[in-house]
Image 1 (cartoon, rainbow, N blue to C red):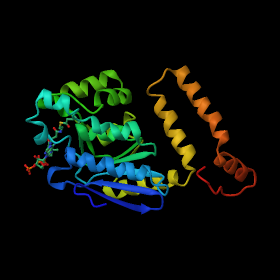
Image 2 (image 1 turned 120 degrees about the vertical axis):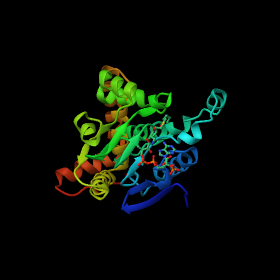
Image 3 (image 1 turned 180 degrees about the vertical axis):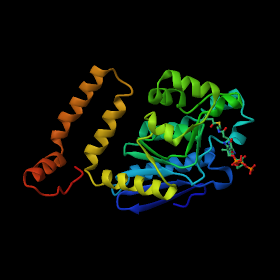
Length: 261
Ligand code: HXC
């Protein structure tokens, strides 16, 4: 499909790459852009040949936030009745394959929230994160207050959200927001993300989806419920072909040839 605000490609077998591409607005996340992003995510999620998805932006901006010019005139009634921002939950609520955020440059407001929604976050050391909504007379609206707090703890999240001050990619790594901080620019960043995506796409689809599902449950459930949930899903994987394929291959010292069943 041809999109106006994003680019899509499969740079490696099994890897879907989505590049946010509204350079004139530093990839501000307008509603039309998000509609395209959700469409592309669903297509990759439903594509049997894809095993992992990457979302990235430009060297200068992952995304500088929700589109302030679109939001400025909104009324409460319009925002509420149209459920403004609700489509942003598509990624977190329905996409089952792993999504990697590769963040270079600005990831502010909704851009930071989009990155936090992804399953794995990689960034450059001098990426710029922040929740500056307070400076615009509002607050994070796409999960930032919840996901940032889970990632960095209450006191730091409170400080960031109430002062609107930015934090660097280096800090994102130190605080556990980012899984890896890449020394270098967008090219090195993307190479790292592609390598991880290729690794994940090389495993059986069923166990990868199950792995993502159980880690996400840890964010919702008590420890005991989460451990029980994990055990049930672990038990159920004995019903998959890939569990037999994987364990047999180990015993036979062979490379597993996954069936995705
Ligand atoms: C709409 C934006 C934008 C945004 C940048 N632009 N961010 N347009 N929404 N979030 C536009 C600018 O208006 C400008 O357009 C062009 O992109 C280039 O931006 P400049 O400001 O000229 O670039 P620069 O001087 O390099 O500064 C970069 C910047 C700054 C520091 C990132 O653009 C900035 O502060 N942007 C806003 C960041 C922000 O507050 N984000 C949170 C938004 S609220 P023109 O036409 O002038 O060239 C939010 C709410 C989330 O995200 C809650 C629900 C999801």
